[in-house]
Image 1 (cartoon, rainbow, N blue to C red):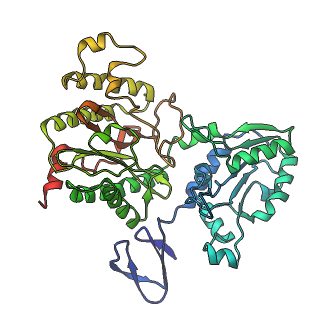
Image 2 (cartoon, helix red, strand yellow):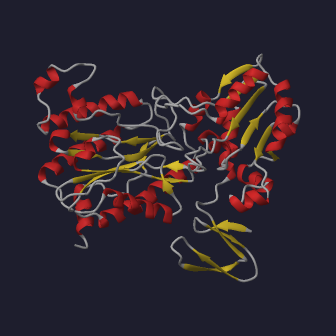
Length: 471
């Protein structure tokens, strides 16, 4: 019998008293259990039922006699013999849980040969690969991870690919169709699309992306658990930073404090470079240099999250470098906080992202008037295509969240239970060197919503109390 406790300890029954080292290296003894082995993992073992269910949902959306073929991402080069850290194609991970390069998923639900209905191709290892790169999935491990019975080495792909292409009518192929994407590098999937159309020009080729966007927008209970875990680790890291920050600290040192807790707890940075922006840099929305000194009386805007089992959290906080907000800073901070809380209350099934954006901007406009940043004349004479409030709040308040930080999904689709969105209003006053953004991750439910970051300090007074507790 095997079970997991805590997240990164796999424990197997045997003939000796059961002990377990948890992620903080404490020794725990479990009475009435026995063990022979402890296996540490970066993140908890994922339930194959999650991927089995995801593939079933995909099959239910396919046309008859259709094949789906999906490739892993490439390992991308840098310079000389260097490579970037591997990042899996998130659609492939969603359907298989495989976090390994050179992997191919082939689904042919209507195949006359049962072995070709659902197949996975993985890279066959050898002694040289084991020596230089480490262990790769064997067939049994891939079968256990994915719930796919028919596992093949990559060398078998060409034979099975030709068989199914000669039998099927429709072919669904995968491409990155995110509206904000700027793709300049040809992907493995893109190369395969060209090959398919060249070798089999008379098939009916279909876009897989719209189906995946529809499916991935609504998270399962398994996915929500992973997102919550990512948020909880982000909470631990943020509390560490609150106790660490003081005048004279460099922004990159703050980034390092986050990374320490992320890695220590089996996570890593979410799929974006952390924003650690002090002073006027906070008015640069995607500031990522993180190379300035945090000065007394400045605010520090933090936009960071951890990725856990490839599921991402996304948090923004703005904190005083010296542990105390000035009156003006606190007034701006509380204005953003009021907008945030009012907005979260409106994030319910039946609304759309666009409707919520308009609602947010109406509330933000009132706050900017109260802060003296806008006048009624500014509003009266504004360009309807770029309202006056855009000078101080120029971005969207929400985006889908999941396997990608700006996750796939349709902004025109009404909110449904299981969807997860950011909520991130902000006010950026360049002339005063003040930028405040607050962001939590919100799960939509039948009864409203659940704030997955509800335990992360947010009130100005709570932040000040934590920062000054040991001073």
